[in-house]
Length: 275
Image 1 (cartoon, rainbow, N blue to C red):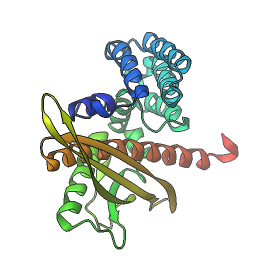
Image 2 (cartoon, rainbow, N blue to C red; image 1 turned 90 degrees about the vertical axis):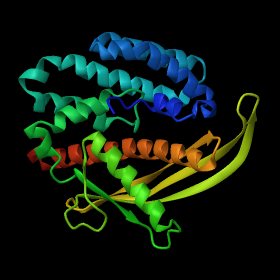
Image 3 (cartoon, one colour; image 1 turned 30 degrees about the vertical axis):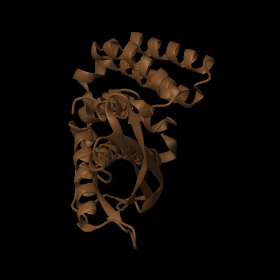
Image 4 (cartoon, rainbow, N blue to C red; image 1 turned 180 degrees about the horizontal axis):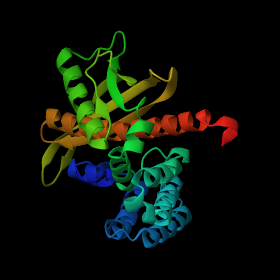
């Protein structure tokens, strides 16, 4: 998958009807800025996101203002360090992703962060920085009601999105692992929705709960997070699958942010006298 566009993912999955007003307004910002990002016009794209942030704030859509401003800051970092990308790609990635690691946002409206991370982990300095936090797996909670087939599907999706992000995967139970994500999934069947065109549509919500993220080699445990996504389709199982995919994709974005924070925190702590 070449782009990690949350709202585009939701639209592909048939989830657009469930978007909030804030998310719909954010989509307009994506539509305006994305062509500029694809053209690598980082400064112009950053200005577009700044304008959008101001407009969103004026409209009262405060929930997405921070993500918009953080997106603009990432693009400004890309503009500032563009000359390093070909000359010193490891340093380029460290400078751009160091900005990301310090930000409050855990998901971003377009693929700029993910694209930078993928490029950085292809460099030797990037691989070295992530040596202790790159290989991930999932762990199950005691008493988790999910059956074996459900767990297998969840692990399959976790692997797909982790590897797509540039992380590595280890099978559950493997000793060769850096990060263990303890999670559970709860499916909830919602009231069907009746439409004039499609008739009755089944609606299913998937709740992916990450209890914590254990960084094995660093002997640290980060707080978990939760992601809820609902989808609709003619068949309930299809709606459940679409919601699960979107929820796991969002959860992987949050995991990537946790990995970056740990990678850059470890770097800061290793410097003598705060150098």
